[in-house]
Structures are given as C-alpha cells and as structure tokens.
Length: 122
Length: 187
Image (cartoon, rainbow over all chains, first blue to last red; front, side):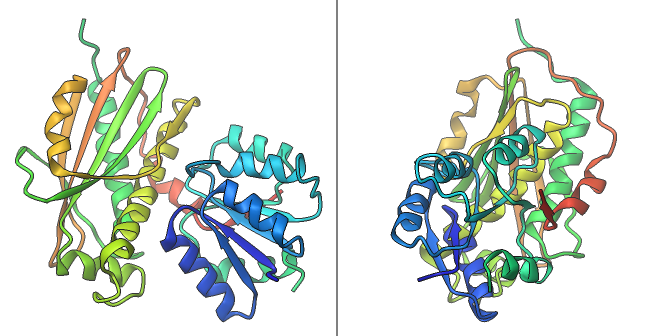
C-alpha cells in the first residue's frame, strides 16, 4: 500500500521523485503513463496523492485526472501536476478536473516536501 | 510562396534557446555559453528530437550527443549519479528528460505569444535522420554550440517550418520566467 503515486513516462523523473520521498519516510508507487496510473490507483485505493506529468504516451496526465474523478469516481485523492507545461488553458482544464496543485519542472523536493506530506496524509 | 521568419523572431528564438539550454543542461548557477555556428556537419551519433507546434509553425529541436564518458559524466553530475550508473537506457532517459526541460522552457516562452501551442514527447534518433531536415522545407534553420562544461560542448539545431509568416515581439522575458519553475502552485 502506498501513500503517493508518481506518474511519469521518464524513469529518471520517477526515480528522482520517488527516491526523495522514500528517503523522507513516505511510501511510493510509480506508473509509466496515465493508463498505468489509473490501473495502479484502482489496485491501491489507499493512495492519497498522485504526482503526475502531463505529456505522456498512451494517456496524458490531464486525461488521467479527469478519469480519476469521472470513471473511477475518486473525489478524495489529491492530484498535483509535475510538468514542463504552464499554460492557463491547461491549468483551467486541470482545475475543472479537481487537481490540487501545479509544479513546473524541475522537481525540487525540499520546496514541496511538507506540502506533499500533508496532501498524502502523512 | 516561402513564408518568412522575421529577424526579431529569429532573435527571440536565439535568446529563448540560450536561456532554456542554460536552465536545463547545466546545474543552477553555472554558465553555459550558447553561440550560433555555421558548421552543418554533425559528427555526434545520436539526437534527441522534440517538436513545438502551433497552427502557423512547427519547430524541430535537435540535441546532438554521443554516448561517451564525458557526456555521461556531465549528465550523471546533474542527476547525482556516477558515470558508471549513467549508462544504457538510464543515460538515454536522462538525456530525454533534460531535453524535455529545455523544450518545455522554449514551449512556455512561445506560449506567451501563441496560446494554441504544444510540444512533443522526446524521441531518440540516429544522426542520419537530421540529414533529412530539408524534406520538411524549413523557412529557417540555425545551429548552436552549447558549452555545458569545460569538457563538453553540445550541438543544438532548430528548424522552423512556417505555415504563415512568423513574427513575435520578443522582449527578454525568459529571464523572469525561470523564477516560476519548481514552485508548487496550490489551487
């Protein structure tokens, strides 16, 4: 069972973010794209926070967020986007899908750790 | 009819690319001179390719690289990994992610002028693919040398396919934009 799900098609990002969070006592699962993210969330509904990239093959992060709220009817998991995108249009789409926050890459763990802890209920 | 990429748009692309390269391919605070070059002969074996597209243009961005010790050591330092750890698929993924940061920065700058814009995911290609740039008839092509460390210079190429004349009022915004990166914006 994991508190946080990291969704990114880059193994570099998955490794960097999950290593940092695990070093700081959080439990982490990873997924390679939005489709994998949905499957992992369905298998482990205890996940409290999803940190997701947007531009990924098979299913992008915003579509995944919409399906988390829609098809999976999960209205409680917190979703934060970790992405190179910063457009107003994408943020509005994310907000409509009920995402909690937005980080423009690169990931700097120290700046977000305490907020991630709160969002992950840890 | 050939569409035109204006001089100020070219200057803007030069500036955005230099800033994006500095923010993505070297550690914070390190210098990374990026200079246009005329040499079209690329000896590096591979490229990471991205595209940034809007309704009126498509930019192809290539980062040329070799999977050699100097390159792996540099990207290993950025990822806090040793040169031995930075090998094979791990190295290629690290190249793609650093390129993703670079292209993302370029995409964000252009989005200020072109709201309907998007970027691709990265693609690793053999250098021979770049020889076919002419097939997409770019209106503008420029090559750059980025000195990412004392031991390593990387070559970058951009090719702009313009479906209409391309112009935008470039005004050095790239410096301010970097301050927003890495902060968590809560909704």
